[in-house]
Image 1 (tube, rainbow, N blue to C red):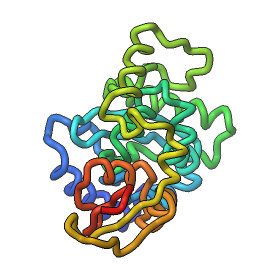
Image 2 (spheres, rainbow, N blue to C red):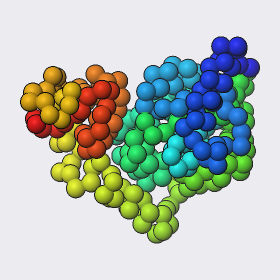
Image 3 (cartoon, rainbow, N blue to C red):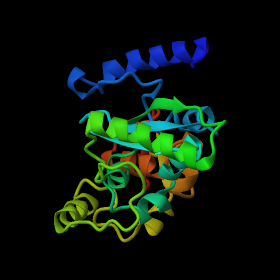
Length: 243
């Protein structure tokens, strides 16, 4: 059961989320926790959900497309999604490709349900968690879930149609890595910060995308995307080369 603080926090987040999404994209369930920006809310997400079992949902805010998953330890599971190497290795799943393509700031993360498993055996806990995941898979028909059966995808082989779809997602011109010489090389480049695009000198320089991401407390792909779009980010412009 949620305490009063978590309940109030959830209600505030729900109101914020409603403002970000149109009514048609909202799920027909009331999540117990809502994090409206999976990029800036990362640390809170991982902290709030440590050692908690339950059902989680990623939602691309603009399109309303969702992914539903479950975990015995939500923090451990969700942490994987923030690992670019994990997403690369898991790129044949829609959600992994979508996170890499769009970036964490375009996704919300919801906890649909917490499950108390402390008095259960491991097999009992796994059974109830998967049963609840299946309930939400049936209810929500999530777009990003290839498999509609709760549990892992061990032994699952993608159809030719899925392979074509994944290829188009990963190689599309909107992908931040499209037509680049390689992620490792691009992320090792310097990042220059400017107050405006007419400035003659940067007010700060980072030696790599990773260093810049650490400064802004965001993911490296967020830095890369803002360099590509040349839009204002945290009251400044990010550039990969001096102006």
